[in-house]
Image 1 (tube, helix red, strand yellow):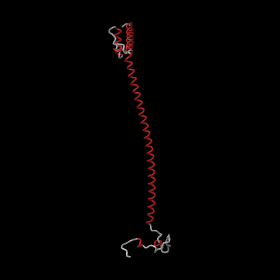
Image 2: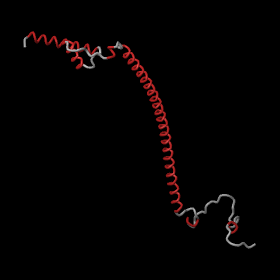
Image 3: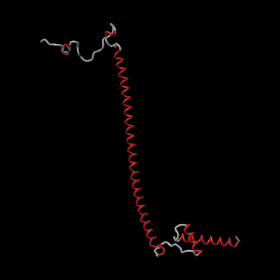
Image 4: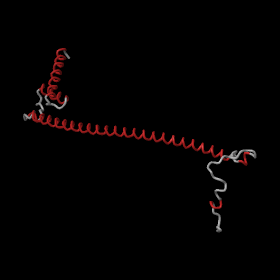
Length: 180
């Protein structure tokens, strides 16, 4: 191969590539491979260019305008859908915040109730302990009765102005038939 042939080949490849880019740019070819094949055939003069039917009949603007309108319509629909989703999300966030607030209020009530129950149980335990202490003390022999305290001890003071004969036990407690 001669140097001139090599340079001619490089120029031919550049022309084919440039023409192929133009064919793709103007949508005469669908992809670069088709564009290269068409460019080679055009430069060699072997065949005609495969121009899409829409471009042959002069309908270049109408499909593009229709496509733009369709895409614009779809874009508006998507915007509306996004707005609806955002609105629903905001409602859900507000509901979640309300539920969190209610949960915190309920936790506060439960904690207060638990504290109250603990205080009540503690009070009950304390009073139970006191009553058990009193019961154990009452089971001990009392020094206050004259018999237990000894013979020389003073009798307990009575309160009120009652005398031993003021009450008759047989009139207070009934035990059988009464004789008049």
